Length: 159
View (cartoon, helix red, strand yellow):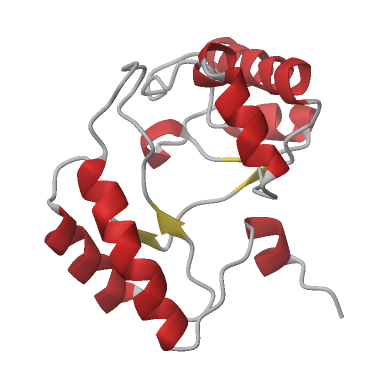
């Protein structure tokens, strides 16, 4: 829904070279949901992303990281590779210093960091803590020799 609501921002993200994955249409907790409800969430999101951005996601992450019965079939039909995080910032509840410390203490080579650009479907979420943390995390990791890549680059490096 955020891509539909903020399509110009989403187009800017794609133009900047970032990878777009499918994270569902409305970000509901999918446990105790039917396979049909799960599939509907991801099919709707897939179509929205394709229509708005002209790209077909190949990656997906379940809302809240919670996979339920029906996920495997949906992923196979939509040809989506499920990707989880290896480090989560808990940035929806921590301040910038705590987010920064959490990420920097847990990052290892090949890490996939999970941070958030908003809270559910709030039109103007307060993400200052996340942004302030990122301003510290990126230079710190870069100075330690880390490079940033898309998930596809990380999983399928060129030879």
